[in-house]
Length: 263
Ligand SMILES: [Zn+2]
Ligand SMILES: [Zn+2]
Ligand SMILES: [Zn+2]
View 1 (cartoon, rainbow, N blue to C red):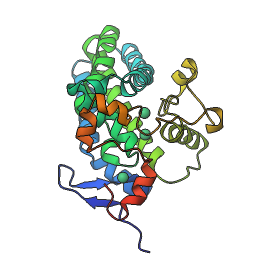
View 2 (view 1 turned 45 degrees about the vertical axis):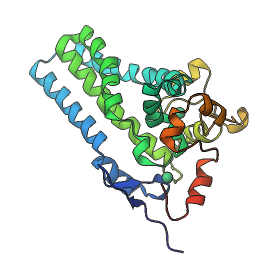
View 3 (view 1 turned 60 degrees about the vertical axis):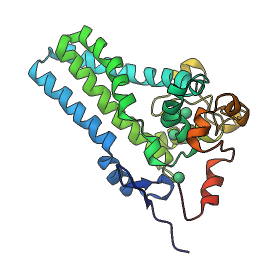
């Protein structure tokens, strides 16, 4: 049998739909570096570095601002992933439902689909700016804010890359990489109410939501639909309307059922 292509034609901005379960690491790196959101983030990081060079903060302040951004990033991600992306209120409001579907529901519905794995710059950039610029400014004025923001954008790219790797169908030799991949897979396929981190599970440890083995927890009935069940969809139909119904089957089953015509 001929292997399925890693990319399928799809009209739209990026021209192609990419599926990580059919990509190699090399193909992923190539697609990643061309992905518009990543290009935007790297461009904004360059703007931040340029601003810092124009109005530099003293080195100790700059390093402190960079450090603050590195420490804050996983905390902000944890809070958003647990209480916004896995919330049960966004699907209720027509204005928020489309955003929720785009930024997390679609990723849990089709975890290997690269285009919905990445966040959208319209949501990511303001979030990173809000999390880094005020604290950076307090530490080092304009230069500190620029350094913190650039760090936030670079951390976003690093996080997105590791998130892609976690969904790539290969077994990493590196033990740390294998462990974070296993935890994220458990978040997708076993119990979505834990393992909210991507590369940093410190906040999961602190809040008691980390688990290493799937045998540590019972399988969640809502691991694929995130609680957006047909009953919920009856009351709050926005997401179902945008998705063409409520899909109850697990993503792997859908991939097989879709055969040669992946979404
Ligand atoms: Zn999630
Ligand atoms: Zn994921
Ligand atoms: Zn897919």
